[in-house]
Image (tube, rainbow, N blue to C red; front, side, top):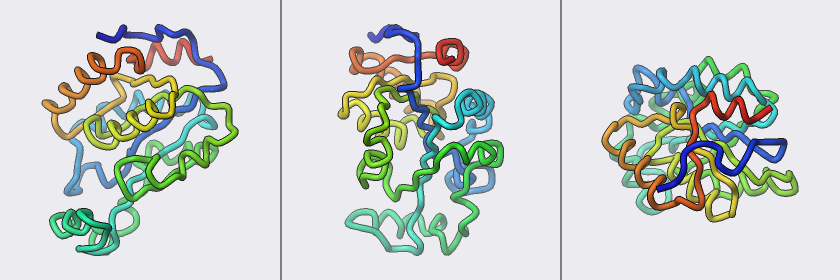
Length: 202
């Protein structure tokens, strides 16, 4: 089991906050609403406020219309035609209102798949930046956060998951993934609460 807390020391300018997919699309009134997105929002706001210039927001951008996408994504968007851009509009992919004020200086990185690494944009953004640590918040714990986490681990980054700033539409799989992170990645992840991260990231 991984030790909890910032066991590898305090955080410095080599640290980046990756806030995953905190968008209106996952808020109240949308087909993909995450019931406790609003519950974790204050913690995420506090993280963003500490170093907005060291924050990157990822945004999941759905297909424009039903049936578009590579391979199984085409089937996915036939099933989820209700969340294609032609149905929900461009406003749905915007950050939730409470977080929009941080960008700029925070940066926004758009992606069309779960992982922010697959399409190369995040690698290009980090190239030459000196970043060796990522703090991960946002949603969902068991989908896009998982993909973000695994890519960071593969790149040898120090990874910190913020336990009170992660959300999912499923309590069961959120809990299962937190157990997975802690039990299977003991050398590659630290988990901490927002308060501890803010205390350690001056």
